[in-house]
Image 1 (cartoon, each protein chain N blue to C red):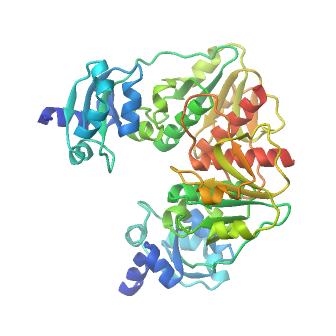
Image 2: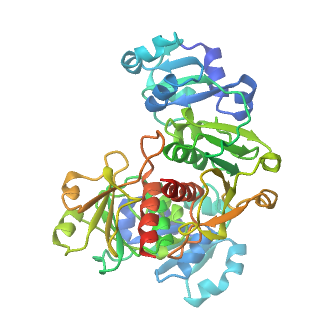
Length: 249
Length: 249
């Protein structure tokens, strides 16, 4: 059974401040917990229903992960999901290590993506399109936010990220092209992408900041055939990566 | 000031049952209300803050739309948005008229899309890619759900829809190609799309039903370069439409 202190600790991880203080975050739901148990993340504790525990005992025993049995009602009380009849894991956050694109690699740069749902969707899209590295401005939503983890559908285990000053990063990076999503760029259907480089996606309302735009070597635009004012940033990321990958194969 | 009966009526429209009974639905927030006031939808009533009313008086006066002034707190109490400091409109639903693709037109078919957020996003994507008609299975989320209207960002005013038996529809439709999104179809990057036809998108968990699949003349697939198990149905719709439009231009 969970102690009062454990419950308090787990609930504190709903908030960024305590995730940073404790260096831990929450992973919730059957699929995400199964994925994180098979990843290289370090697990502090799994809280599981009896059914989930029995069906996944090999995953927890393998690493001798501490497990507490709880009811779905307990999981919903300590976690953030409205409904969770499976499990929750307390997982160690990773060190914030710098990431650089290899010459033939596509790397995403997120300039101030604020919505956790969008960030989670972008992780999932990156994982689909084989993108391994994401650089995030410090103002981008916290990747360890439970909504991001949940929306990423397990893809957070396969993509690496770094948070920091992306202006400074771009000022120092070598000669790879930097593509940026704008409404007045070159048509992505006719543009020639390079074999590697960076793709910058900007804030949901304001787009890419001028100080980041200064390092963009090629503005790109998804052509519009109707009248919607814009596409959601997750949608735009997918369409741009699809066009880039299409060209390389 | 809003009467008790008006408040009760507006709140009842949060539910599909009462939207159908009254033939009316809610549009909330500055942008969406502005768009619906400029569309061919028939407006029963606008509830607006004094500021919104003054700034948009031409839009309401033009059609002699009844307007009630209310505070943001009132708007939040009668509506579904957590925060609304602008307006809410009560709008007449449209007749459920059959829609057919013209020979050179792309028409979307939604087979059991359950999530209102996904449906709203798909309306916005359709609008971006110049799709004017969407056919929905009866089990697809209600397009008049406030979450759909809100997620569509005004695009509900520019796209038409029909709800009905899409199996029967497909059985009767003439010789246009029917593309369907599957995980084992032809690569959308190398496939040749026709100049018009239908694109079927299936349920978030189960995909396209077998009885609908029977009418699909070409299965299509977005190639995967990484390890995510799937893409969200809104994302997949955008990528498929982008590939189709790219080919036609």
